[in-house]
Image 1 (tube, rainbow, N blue to C red):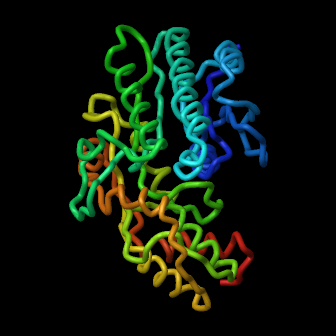
Image 2 (tube, rainbow, N blue to C red):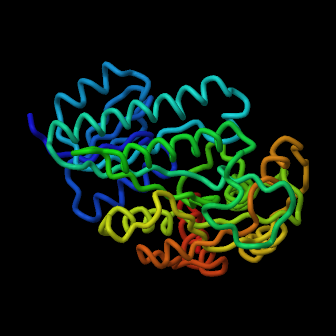
Image 3 (cartoon, helix red, strand yellow):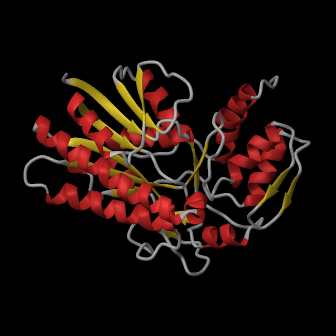
Length: 328
């Protein structure tokens, strides 16, 4: 049929839904969204129900469409991956290989390189002791602690190899190692850093919250609008300017207690207690307090728009109050 489309896997996830809305606002009219089940219809989007493990389905998509960009967001997230490692590795590694293969087939079919975005994670890092330095992309990433982190690093390596060794046409691989991401409009779905958004959503619903992480622990975070802006920036920049295949980005690194205090400023009745989950605490302790994102700033102009205070004032609180029908 020769339909030029943008292809997004994991379209019903937190990032997928926000990305599709942002692409629509930018004028993208032909989006193919793949996920296991359909939730709500989104403007200018054709939804295909299915799995990234279904190679026949992917072959059908390859035959029917001409894909200009691939955003491969489908994954089993960190906490769920630890609970079901076999499924997680099947989806996170083998499923990603299937989408790489789709991208390569499209490149040969169209005789051009296919832009391929891959959301990696700070889960690729494994710090054996608490470290307040800003971790660079090449630091502490040889032996991730979690199945999720291992899979992300494996797929980064495959994507980079497919990109750099192609002789004619193939995938143009670009990855961001995301920190924790806070969305005010969608509920968290199984990430180890979800204590922050879970806390905020509980407060907005006038519920108490049991935090599974110790109060002094820090992680790097961004809010969803910054995450989407970063994706747009790295996908639009000339390949010649990209000196890495995977980049760190960050906005702020508050402790759990600092998150609580900031949330309390807006939801005064909010109460939080602690019930430490030793498994998840161990995972978080292996991740950096801070990351160095100077390469992203220098190579493709990344710059966070939201610090912690601005995130709450301009994004989190207004949107979360709207979500839960709260009066301003």
